[in-house]
Length: 387
Image 1 (cartoon, helix red, strand yellow):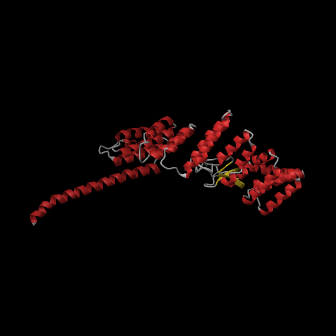
Image 2 (cartoon, rainbow, N blue to C red):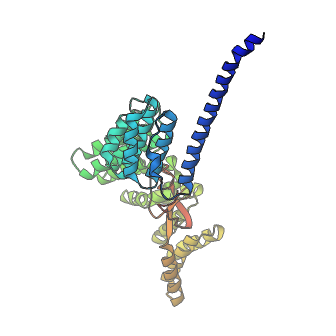
Image 3 (spheres, rainbow, N blue to C red):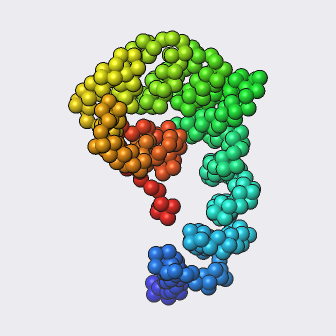
C-alpha cells in the first residue's frame, strides 16, 4: 500500500503546481483589469507600456488591449486607438475576436470623421452572425449623414427584423425622398412624391410627416379637396399634432367657401384636444365672423376654466387692440420677450424641448415623439459634453 502512496506523491505535486499557476494567471488578469479601471476613472494619461503585448499573448490579453483602444477613442486620442486596433486585427486568434476589433476600428473612424474608411470596415462585418445588424445600423447612420437616403433604406431592409422605431425611421427616409421630389416641381413630380409616400406608409401607416407632405403636394397642385381630406387624417394618426395643421385647414376650408364647416370641425377637435392654440383659433374665427367682443369673451371664459399663461398673453394682446393703454403695451412687451426664450415643442418620451418640430428627438433619438407644448415650457439645452 505504501508503494502506491509514493507513486501518487509526484502527481499531487504536479496538480498543486498547476493550481498555483492558474491562480497566478487569474491574479495577473485581475491586476491588469484594475489598472485599466484606474486609468479610466483617475489617470489623465495612459502608460505607453500597456501597448506592449506580452509574449504569452492570448485572447484575454487581446480583450484587454481592445478595451484600452476604446479608452483612447473616448479620450479623444483617435490616432492611438486606430493604430492599436489596426495592429490587433493582425493578432486576433479567433474570427469572433477579429470581428470585435473591426467594430471598434469602425467606431474609431467614425469618431475621426473618416466615413469612407468606417464604411469599408463595417462592410467587413456584413457576413458576421453576431455583428451584422449592428453594422447595418451604423452604415445606415453614415449614409444618412451623406444624405444618401436610398442607401440608408437598403441597409435597413437587410436587417432580419425591424423594430417599430426602425420602421418609423425608414418611413422618414422615404419622406426625405418625397420632399426632394416635391422640390423639383417637374411634370411627374407629384407622381414621384406619391410613390415615395406610399412606401413610407407601408413602413409606418401612422407617419404624420408623410401625411403632411402628401397634403402639401396636393395643395401645391391645387387639389384642395383632396389636400383637406388628407390633412384631416392626422386626427386619427396623432391628435396631439392637430394644432400644427389648423392654419392650413382653415385656408383649405376658405378656398372651398366652407368656413362654417371649419368651425364645426374645430369644435369637435377641441372636445378631444384642449390645446390652447385650438381655442385661440376659435377666438380668431369668432373675431372674423362675429365680433371682437365675442372672440375675447370666448377666450376669457376658456382661460377661467383652464388657466394658461400663453393664452393669457394672447388675451392681453387682444385687449390692447381694444383699449390702447401704456400698461397693456408694457405687459405685452414683457410677455413677448419672455416667450422668445421658451420652447414650442417637447419630446413626450424624454422631455427634451425645442423651438421647432424635430421628427427625431435630438436627445433620446426616438421618432415621432415631439409634440406642441400646451403652455410656456423652458428650453432644455443639450450639452455635448454630457453623457
